[in-house]
Image (cartoon, rainbow, N blue to C red):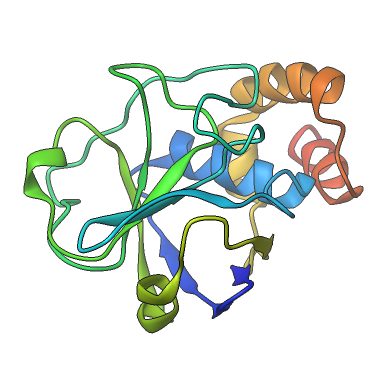
Length: 177
């Protein structure tokens, strides 16, 4: 993730939270996050981004269910998790922790961990930009596994937030072949 403050590298947990990771990867590949800001930053807690409206009320136009795995906890700094407004309201907003936040376990789906750039996370201020989110690795198997959800999500996204590039379309086509 390239931000206006530097690079954050995150390992995603597609084996434990496949739908959540597929959603994030799909949005990233479509360019959805490019140019959005971190609209909510709370010192010694977390940074939050992914709202297309920039104020914390927006999303991609769809919602999906929570995914919880007992091994994925808000156990320290650098935990990537879905922001939501209650059960089953995940969309595009996410947060990254500054510290352990165990009170969020079972309420917000953890789907990754920062492996490099926690200093960047800690330096992010409200209004700082997400320049781009680059996905490394092959997503074909993940996209094939979540093909039905991706098809529904992309039909909605295509109307309101057309892809800023052709990567997502290519990935979706390869998932159906």
